[in-house]
Length: 615
Image 1 (cartoon, rainbow, N blue to C red):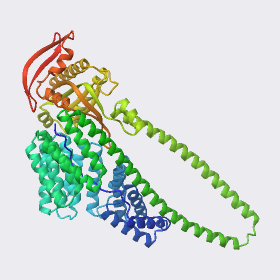
Image 2 (cartoon, one colour; image 1 turned 90 degrees about the vertical axis):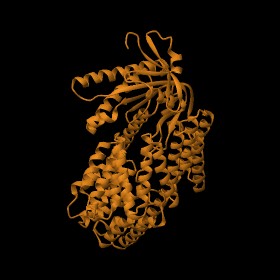
Image 3 (cartoon, one colour; image 1 turned 180 degrees about the vertical axis):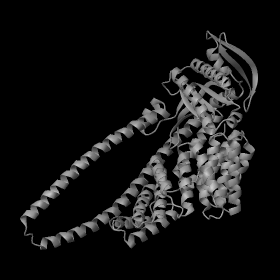
Image 4 (cartoon, rainbow, N blue to C red; image 1 turned 120 degrees about the horizontal axis):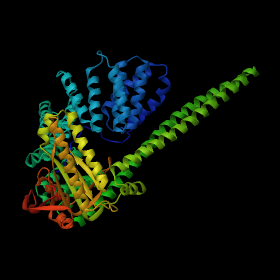
């Protein structure tokens, strides 16, 4: 199973430049001007919008603040089209900050306010941002429908083709994620042809890399190697080092899948050298993680464990560097705000001196004024207390949600270690039993169902599998398209046994068989499934910086996958190692299959297992 990834169109950087500090100072002074809608603040808004379009070095917190202020200025001046575009920019930055709900609200507002008199590129920007957010939320059917509407409205005479490339790229990724690899390939190739025609090197590079990843995912490793190699040459030629390193990692995965481990290691070594020269801690961490995975493929678990530890150290270092950057930016912002406050204080001091030169002759008015101030202060204190109370309640609610999400994606013991230490150490497990399942004829069935019907049917099956895993105390690892993967014997305190995985696999087949009978009676298409189990050593731990994922590595995983692909519909196919653990279990019957050819593994002994009295 080739571990490749698509390249999305993203915004780089977190460095606050001197020009941005200048913009921030202008923004601070504009807060008072914007209340009256002067010409000066409109000029500021126009220049800031142009800077935001061109400068990619600004952090998204500051971008959001500036876009919000720009929108306020344009509203006061009645420039509705500019206001809409400012809100679209604000939504884009909020999405990058992980606030998808805020971003969607802004885009829905922008869509309602859009007017035919506005630039059509604003409408396309709204729709492109919708596809970005829904792609992040993994609502692929929405990405598909919005993209098709946007492309149908597209006018070839429009000059800003970057919006079109973003929509096409998101559409292709959504199509692949929905299992329609053939259509996704056509869309990626369309991006390639248009970028080649437009002489757009950046999108030409992205399309080639994504075509390579797609081919790797579908098992066409020769084509994957061709497209990824072309992309790598372009990235190296135009000095796009981050893209070049990502492509080398993808090529390494393809080499490993083809059995060229030496070449795969050499590519990772090259990536490590480039990352070292650039002092890129993030990419150094990526390389160490891939090295760990690669060595686990050929059972060098000691070296794999060493690389995993190196990955954890570098990953923690990278996170620390990001914190330092954030603190630096915060300090720079604080200094700018401090200067603005000093200016305001000087103005207040001047006003105070003027007031002191005037004689206050009306005592009643003085006391009335003091009373009003006290009253307003009381209201302010009360409002502040209410705000603090609401904030604490909201923070606790968010904390509870975060706790629930963390426990939903990680084993409890791993989640606890992550909360206490900030990381979770990878663990070697001598005996783990891996379940792999896959639906037969998935592509044919997907063509007979709508996207919504297909997703609903997969969801129904996977929810049933989740309940079965919970029943037997087995750890669900992940789903990949229509494949489902789970394991017993991990993490360290897991009590599920090899036998539990067999019982669970039999119940999975029971569910699918009964589901097919129901669907056949209704005249509807239905799934059939293969299930495979293998038992052996694995390394387990957390991968990634964002969207943490608990995963397992080792040849045991590969063999379990081969057990599934070498099995038959309606059967549970197990390896010799699993058979030796459970062969004396009462109530189970084993059918020896002899030596079966397994892709990449040669001939292996396999057995069908079923309950006594069934076939």
